[in-house]
Length: 267
Image 1: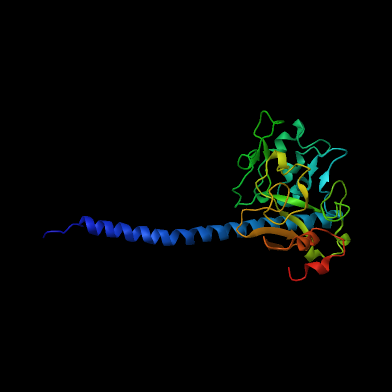
Image 2: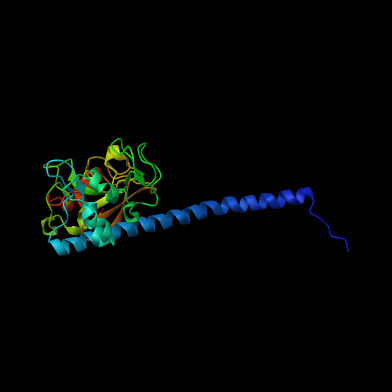
């Protein structure tokens, strides 16, 4: 019994059909992957929120945004480690020394997934993947990066440290008179290198907002999610803020006690 083989035209038609199907499927697959990354980013911010809440419950206040003793040392992230199942790493940190000190090199070189957004792709020139090696780190693996920054406040009001994660002083949630569900605690600030304080242990990992979302990567709310960025509110919820949010509304969300919560209605 003879078997008829594919003709060249039939083979080309089959290849064309397969190509068309792949062209239709790839955007859908990419959309599903993007959606999964957004869910994971939101989940990581929620974990950070739970850790901040647990810290507040134990200490009566949030951790200081930066512990300086006259110079920038360690960020709020370091204080959360025991609440993020990183107790052994926390025990290695020398809180009396800067994050760049030799005594802190081993601990601060750790890559901590919960501090990273899986969608991050536009990284600064001085960031290499999930680690950052600055000129002060001529040897060693570099320092672990973070894609989430603490909210220092808004640059449109005085004083600038009108957020909840500020230099040297722990803030109590009772001080957030603008409302816990109307005040940002942590926001995406992805892809930074050492020149933009992108290490999770860096005491400079706080910022005062002065531009709209995804306008500037340098110490502003910035992400690689299409259309906006995720923020963690003091009440523990995570919200996706659109690029189109008005700057005055965004600024109001970044302050703890300016009496401007009425300006955030409908955000």
